Image 1: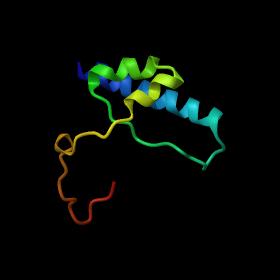
Image 2: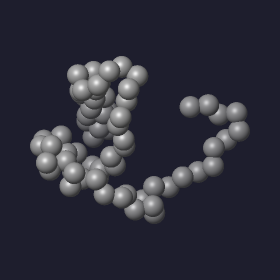
Image 3: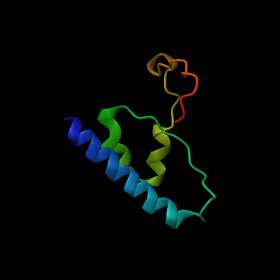
Length: 75
């Protein structure tokens, strides 16, 4: 299962790079994060422009755990 998630993630990254190069000039990014439940990823990828807006919902804060960053840790 983990290999499938990794492969899907790599594919999504490649698709985003291809899509972003044909939709705007380099260094002119106008994108945002869309958090999806894992079971809706395929639906998101197959949605048309009109249906894409249905996915833009606030993600519940309790489902986004956060930890304090360690000092000296760079991302």
